[in-house]
Amino acid sequence: MKHSMLTTFDNPHDPFDEFTPWYDWDVQAGYHTSAFLSRLVYSSDALSEADQQLAIENAIDDVVSENVNGMYRKVTKEIPD
Figure 1 (spheres, rainbow, N blue to C red):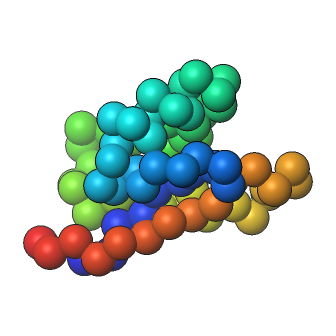
Figure 2: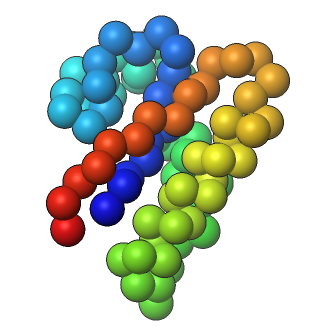
């Protein structure tokens, strides 16, 4: 299954394979990308895992499409189920 994450153009870490360094760098840079994305994602315990992943994907796509300052980019990775 393909998973997506939101990152910034200047973060040198891979959010899939180096999440803690990625997150630490992001917070130190003042971006707080995870918190920003969480404010945009509609989530509920009533949603299935697949629906939650879809909500995250849609929010990431919205951020990237409205990326007026060019700061954000979407990265994807194939992750086995």
